[in-house]
Structure formats: structure tokens, C-alpha cells
Length: 103
Image (cartoon, rainbow, N blue to C red; front, side):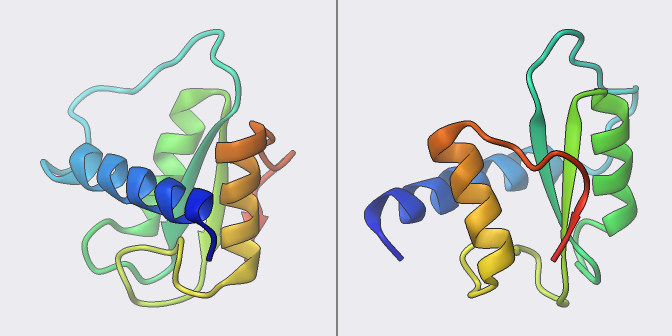
């Protein structure tokens, strides 16, 4: 994994942990007029259920969901080329998947 991908992984992991550390949001999350926002969810995440990622992506309006197999808390940087490629394209080139991406 290159330097840019490692930096993106660290940023994504930190943002995800901070966002979900207190549990699901008490009120709907909205981002009117925002460009695409990528949300990554692991199918059997023990800390943040996939349902939360689906809900967040839906509430954002511009949210695009990437789902990954596994039982770990994070999906990026774990060797899944589908997830890693999509996240790097988003973080580096600002190109989100066109629709939900099931990796």
C-alpha cells in the first residue's frame, strides 16, 4: 500500500471511529447540496452494524455505500482490493462509486 493509501486509511479510520464512538446519531443526518459522500460498512461489523452504514448513506442524500465482507470493524486497508480501490479513488481523485458498491 502506497503512502497516499496509508494516509487515506488513517483518515478514514479516525473519522469512522469518531463518528460512531457514541452510537447512532440521535437525529437524522443531512448534508443538503453536498457532493457524494462515501460510507463504508462491513457486513458483520461487531461495533457498528451494517444497518447503521446503510441508514447514514440514505440520510445523507448524496451518500454512496460501499459494503465489505468480514467480521472486522474496518474494511479499508485490510486487503480487499474492491474496497481499497474505491476508497482511494474517492480520497485521491474525488470520484465516488456511482451507486452502492458491494465488494
